[in-house]
Figure (cartoon, rainbow, N blue to C red):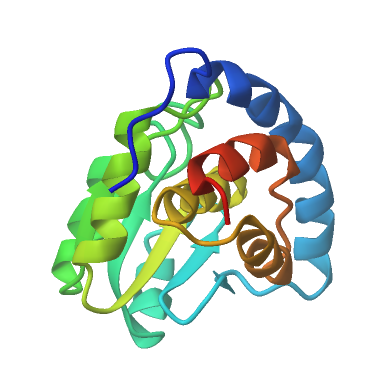
Length: 180
């Protein structure tokens, strides 16, 4: 088992830049969204990420075989968007599990990474993680996979195939993955 994060390299400090850069990446992603990007972007056979979902998107997720929805968006970030309780109720009504692991613009923490690992490991079916653009969900997935030992280049490749760039957290991904 890998050790917890070094107190010398706090996750939040390393990822403040990542969250600040999210806005720029969001603009690129939103432009791509208007082109041909699907709402749910598959990272691998187990997980897809998405920009903010609506209550109607729950049915599409269910039809896609999703059994767990992971909300990485804090309540109140966009007051007009469906909030956590709304998405949770719709997911449960559709027979899906739901977990909230909100990521604010202040960065990622060890408990959030652990919560994502637990979600990934406990789900028997497909997972849909969402936030404002899908970026925070992808970056959190990346950190979780690194901590589980996946090679940073493979993490970057899979995230890139879904249209996301892990550069903002690449150093932390490499630190968590350890020597390969």
